[in-house]
Image 1 (cartoon, helix red, strand yellow):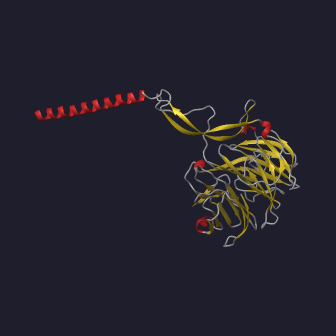
Image 2 (cartoon, rainbow, N blue to C red; image 1 turned 135 degrees about the vertical axis):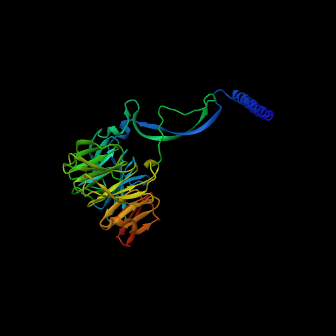
Image 3 (cartoon, rainbow, N blue to C red; image 1 turned 90 degrees about the vertical axis):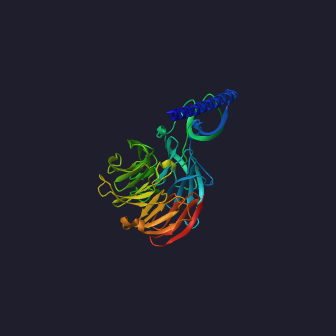
Length: 426
């Protein structure tokens, strides 16, 4: 009994000692914090993005044809009649004479602020100029001129006020801020604060239309130009090629990334899957079905009864999946997965006959024989690790491949022929 009482007394003394020590430490912290400046106890370096507003009149204006410029931030590529058109993101379009593929020549540059997408038919090229659709006469490649525009058709894609102007971009700002001593759980707020994350092939083209890559958002089928943004398809009747008429808009759901026409169908690559629309009446596409997958980035190309979709990981893609999905679309109302093949980090892709090309970003370009869809993963005919690959356009006798260092041209087949032709350097 006495032993138990002694043990309790000892434990009580230890607890009391800890309490006294904690109290002394607490008083000491109060003294230190009390001696701190009321408003600036510490500093923190933060990074945020401030909106850039520009008067509409300064950015939405007639296109100008200028001397060739250095390709620094390339976007979409478009091929037509032995000429290449390369988008310089938000700046304009590079025009390149590719009739001699061993020696491509830069002809000029179309100054067109806010441009990201393009498509062409006959002698006319269609491009976005922030909120407007612009029609360019490309019959004389040495003197491209603007001949028409439809104003405000892409207004919904941009924030605009009379007082501030048009929101065209964001600039990164680093700022050292002071932390209030009285606020233990602090967070920085500002009204104009936006945090940002880092980051087609041959189908049924209208006669006289060109060819875009698998990452295209503009495409042409018959007498219609189709344009997509994150959630909507907008149609333009281009029966009279220099005078497009704004047509219907179709809500597609969020996360739309690419559009690919094939036969009388439209295939939309979205972050949540692949949407299929009946396009037998090009003026009024009708939803058929959706092939769903996990949230990821996914361009799509189609050949015969198969759709090829690449799924990519990365900050902007919100997933860790890197694969090629082969999808049976023989019954477009019920698309079914045939097989998935593991990839490294696939971006754009293209198929021509049995040749399937996968642009793997920093992991290079892969060439597969796709004659047997179930064995694509086993039939890697070439892996060019030395090149950076973002997107491809395969033609019958040449492959255009765009990377972070340039646009490369190769002669190819599905066996071991892969001969370098030339490069347009960035």
